[in-house]
Image (cartoon, rainbow, N blue to C red; front, side, top):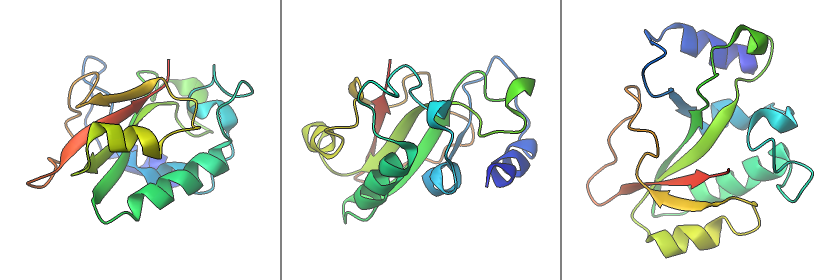
Length: 142
């Protein structure tokens, strides 16, 4: 699956000064077993496995008030050392009409540092706008 991400990322015209891109959470988590690709400092200290995170985000995505879930890549996403692996990720963005406190309940047990409103590092140029009535909440680690 990581090759599908690489193929998609190769189509983007990106510079290092720009906010890293986002990818659909299915594209990022499906087939991914690289435990240190997201929140590596929390892996082994409480953060659920990649498979568990994927299962939890699938449950969240199935909620009627969730429009979309995207994974925000880390600034090192295009570093040559990650070419044969899943690119590192920084956060997960949930497009929803739910409240921040509700989203915080959804992520309990993920060992995240919390949920922030909007894009922590600015909106990536490949990120869509949320539909009317929805906003972006970002799940952040570290």
